[in-house]
Image: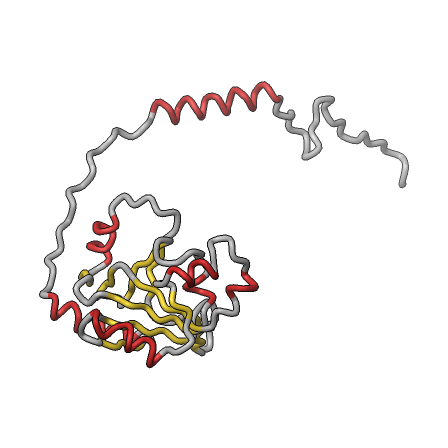
Length: 219
């Protein structure tokens, strides 16, 4: 019959933890384990190895580099003009991009100084900059804060016009970074074509994060 046999419940130990009957880990033990781990890491430091030899890449002929730069630039959505000479540059830019803010000129820097706000910069519309050199393998150009007063300028403009010396084109990014060396400029950027982004449906959108139109004028 029910109630004839008694049963006693199992008693938990006095040092039980909130997660069961296991004895809780004390703070001292945690510190000891941490110290042991750190000591082990210090003892097992990897030996310093010499840097690998610098890999050299053969440079192509200037004519081939120029042709390749033009081809890749077109593939990434940019447009290239070759005015063949610095003496033709200014006239070409004035005729084809009237009203563009030319940051090659001192007065444009004075109108849009480094501390200029985003509201003013958003009114730029079309911008003209001069790049320091180009990269043939991806159609990119290198610019830094010596080419524009505010790092927003290359990205906030809807139309970006870049002037580039046709003799200042290297073959690939390896050569490009070697060319940069240990520069002290606070900000620099490689720009290749207009801003591009795409979603999972493969819809390509230009100008989502930067210029909608991108032109390189070679001189």
